[in-house]
Amino acid sequence: MRLRILDSGHGFGTKALFALIRTMSRQPVLDVIKLVKYRADFYGRPMGAVTQDAMRGPSTWSVGDRELMAAFVAKTNHSDFCTKAHSAVAEGAYRDGEKVFAVLSDLDTASIEEPLRATLLMLGKLTREHVVDAEDMRAVLAAGASRQQIEDALAVCFSFNVIGRLADAFGFFVPGPKAFEAGAKYLLARGYR
Amino acid sequence: MSDIRQARRALASRILEGDGKASSSERRAAFNNSGLAKPAATLVDKVASHAYRVTDEDIAAARESGLNEDQVFEIVVCAAIGAATRQYDTALAALEAATENE
Image (cartoon, rainbow over all chains, first blue to last red; front, side):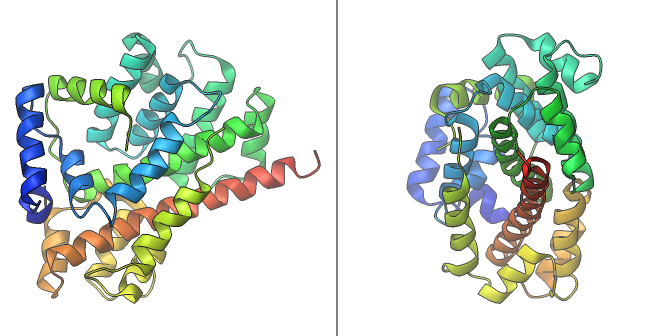
């Protein structure tokens, strides 16, 4: 973590919470938790509300689909921390690690439904090039995604284009798979608030 | 359907108009990736354009220019949210254009 305040500048109550997390999960506290708990009124709480709506609010995309979108956006942004974190959540939600691996390895050949594939393609372009046009959107609609599904996917994309940038800019430590599995269990049980 | 508009408005309002250690104008400049002096401008542009290329030196240079850690924290958060907001708004406009005759 590149800012000392994000690593150890929390108040007494938050530090006690971190000790509890370490004891219960037997894993280090993920840097993303340290970020959202630092001066939570500035970033953590208002951003948590956005991410909760995007990832767990009503949508015809499943939780697994949305976590897969998050992992895909993170991979496109070269964000190692977020790719691993949300691959683990998507694998847990789908109960299918191979599907997640296949999509992140080669979207064109992965065995998924066409509306999801077209949506991921569009999110990848938006994340990589920072722009999409009406033609890109027509392609997603033609593949069978609804207008509302596209809006819901853009909400996921918004959240993870914020979080991935912060993970990389602040230099989040990337732990081993067990720490991400513990984080995934928490996010599937409790969400983002 | 998920509707993040209200939550997004509250987020933008908090980071840009609420209390902060960086000035409101600095936070807004970071959000817009426009109008900051170097080296903060370099850091903000990297966060907006390709955050994975941010280095220890970028953060150190911003600190050495006189920003404290809380100010760097706020400026980086504003830069990330600003960049994601521009992408989101561009995409919604494209979706609007694609469906305007429906």
